Image (cartoon, rainbow, N blue to C red; front, side):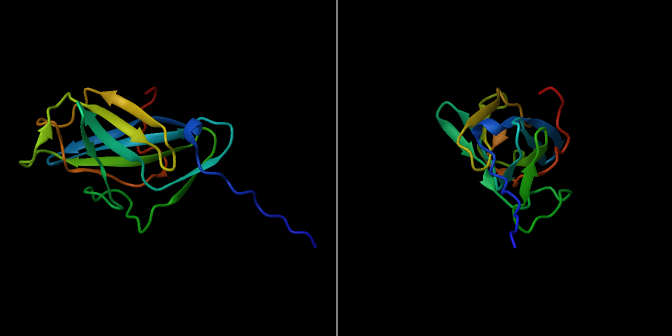
Length: 158
């Protein structure tokens, strides 16, 4: 008797994803922004894990620390990074969080480029320059959560 098996859905590659900002919140001493990954290809693909996230300015770089569950308590708790299947047009998001100024060295607000690399890809995208985050700027307590299904409030047209 012949058996059939479902064809494995491949991981998303460099050309499969569009990247944009999602919903953001700020509540002293925390700020959170969502980075949204959208399948812009013509086939389904999967994401699992953490995006690379960094703020870079004049040779200085703050790399986000990868955390399973971040500062904010209102996100769904995770026990491991989920496997997210994206159909064409489907989205996943990762929340980037930072603690606002608490005495540490900070980039001045309006400095730096926000760089993102989707999980399991090598193409880095600059989502913005002259980043404004908090009164004191971008501080070293920068964290990124793993990708999760959905958009977490994607901004249309960005």
